[in-house]
Image (cartoon, rainbow, N blue to C red):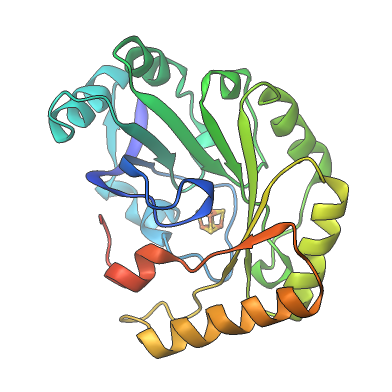
Length: 231
Ligand code: SF4
């Protein structure tokens, strides 16, 4: 059984390499991290566990099929940390019907079934998260996904995060890097002005550093829907 926090869509992916792509989100419950600025605590903190459903892979896929009207779409596995559960059966069921799979994880837990995904976004957490980067575990995640499309996504809250992102990019030059401003306004909805200012500041910092192999993106879903759940 899979602990599910929410299944929603179709909507668009709001960040990373697949930004703007139509998708249905499967958000699993549970995470091995506690990032200081986590914006999905409802899928992380055990105090929300009674809101999570224990669902079979078949039930999850049936719900996705209903949401997409039976039309194959990109399924985005998110969390929490989706890697802490066995999602291989869900991927098998979806692929048999032409669905594609993307997953986002910090790279702290890995599994052989990563190789069955179509896309993996590895989002190691920078110093402002207060979490510690485990390179060995990250490299194992990368190893398990060596034949699929892998990208790096790092959210940036301050200069230390940007310096850290530069170090990570140096260590993994083969991975396309997506940088996004970190949303620190988790109560209510951040103002469009403050989101724009943060994005502009990040663009400026990256250009000043002559860092021309990075892609800078806003968190599009926060622009469109603020901190709302399930969109
Ligand atoms: Fe939240 Fe992601 Fe950090 Fe887990 S890894 S605590 S889901 S931001």
